[in-house]
Length: 385
Image 1 (cartoon, rainbow, N blue to C red):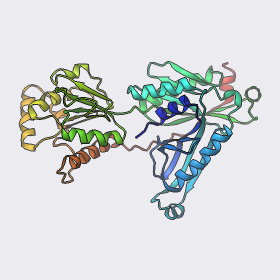
Image 2: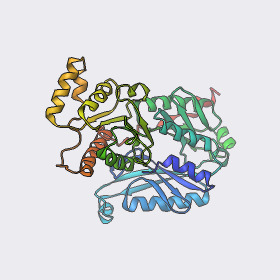
Image 3: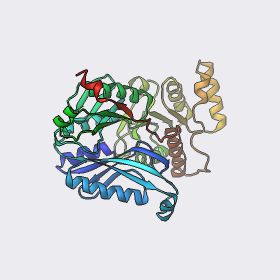
């Protein structure tokens, strides 16, 4: 699965234009999560998704117009049960999608920083002006990225009060993982200065940066190889670890982002494991799985799984508990690993494991909804300027 922000950088490097489509509000039963994004290139190619069927086709058409006119747009789509049925979709509701032009020399540093934060598994937030009319003077100042340390790159308008509000909301969004819109009322003086109409608002969409999850595959055998293929396809960063050079190398795992030949008893000292990490132990034997699990349960990994029979797992758990392992954390380990689908071949086993990884990743309802628009009167930022 290609990453939308990585593709934006590729387009920019090649001097091409595109349009980034972001779901900013949705109600009802719709075929996308609250963080769905799609990039449409000027050649019509698409990366990512904001839904399916007629919705995606309509968004694609609007994106093409945005690319040609270099003007952002908020597009609203209503999918009634009748329309959904006619289009083959088992859903219905309303969705708002913000479509913004991607131009080679515009805000490149901001997009580079977003891609870096995602790739390195850090936390952050993005703030984007989504007003229906963005003046030309603000095209270079309509997006910023907030880092976990509180620093920002990019800008919104002329900074000051508005950016202070965006920073505060961004820190909250980053921490609590939701979407928000700040709606700033604009004074007549500000409207004239920015090329807006009296009564216009400046709406800023604030969203968390979603890190690319990392799958640490311990063991480079035949099951691990099939897991890597599927997990890469569904959006995981892949790190393969084995203590044998013949089994952890780029030739055997071309889809892997990293291969490491490491001592399984000490490797965790050199790994960055956090709540966006997934650990799968599929080594060549339980004597090698054991040190992996013993170290893994001391981390914040979101998912830990181990292949093996219930009998062998029970014996290992007993040994680990005798050595002081946390019983509650051990109980969270998926062992035997994978969903029970009667899998037999390495490919089928990999499907069952990948399905469980997805289940863990999407376990919390992954359909963010907006809080109410937070409206900020003009007097609040005019008088404090």
